[in-house]
Length: 109
Length: 164
Image (cartoon, rainbow over all chains, first blue to last red; front, side, top):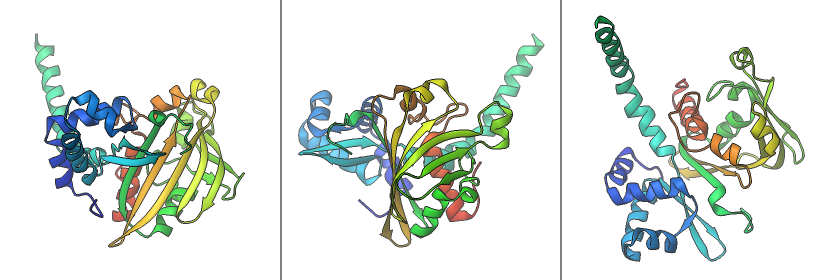
């Protein structure tokens, strides 16, 4: 894993349906082994490993050892950082403008 | 993490912060610092095994009817500035108060180029109320949880300003 996951790595990791479904799966039930993920996604072990590697590089997935198993955990913080840096900044005012517009239009009826 | 814990009940939150480990340690354990980011309640730690942990309400929280101590717990392990293990319980909610204590581990690891990796491991087995409260849903009203707190801590230490 790079020392600091870049925004690029996070956007790249999120730009794939299978990887997003892996994150959703961990959101529902965290701490999954490779075998569990492989079985549920009906994908080859190699395919799942490749996607997990990209998610780990983006720090979106963190692994912990538990006995002989390697467990995968969702780390939601990089998405939080993207949200704070890129989403909040552009959405707050526009959303409130649309809400104002909707209120104005509806009150004229 | 003990082998008897159901791994699915543990939540991990990790962030990279460009600051010395000692500054991050202070920001986590000093009430003057915890008052500057996240929910901004001053946290008091007796930094020894068996010592008390108390997070106090802000004036705004008290106006909303929250108790003076909003989170309590016990310090289990202290290794400054690398590791702090404690128990952790919300007192402002009857369900979490009755459930009892979760276990929280803070780890700070220097990773080079001036960065530290800060990892929070929150063990929540048998604590569905607390697990719901700290879930990774980040955009609910009044919510935010650890992701939001860590993001704000990063902002404060790297830019001198919190976001909130």
